Image (cartoon, rainbow, N blue to C red; front, side, top):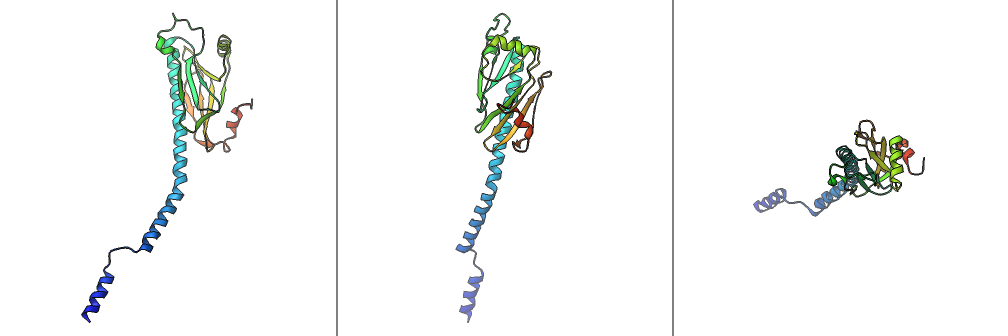
Length: 200
């Protein structure tokens, strides 16, 4: 009889798990990971979109400072439906005597983060930008202008990602400050569509 009790005690004191329990935990982990994956992917895409807006704001601030320090008009040109932009002196007829440093007159090309592109843009035309455009005579890409007195073109740029989320970067002409909207889907914000190419 003592032999049987020892055998029962060994069965009740087991410390391992069965194959069925292990499989059940693995299935549960796979289901939870499958549910969480779209959330993390969406967060990563929104973060890339915000990073792109931060890059554009930094390029705008840098172009404004370069315009002030060099005494020349600078432009931020962007390629619609792509993720590239450049900052450069706007006029091809730069007076070398007025420029404070040749290094400040270099064209800088950059790209937005992967999956982020320019979708639309709108820049208010004033007398100065019209005059500058006549001097330039070759504005193949839309441009936001930065003047030596610290003012800029009043402009709005929209960037979006592959899932349809969008941001608008608004630039105030008088102060040169920029504001970024919240991330939203294009279907939620109808005002973004008013700046789409060909809608004017």
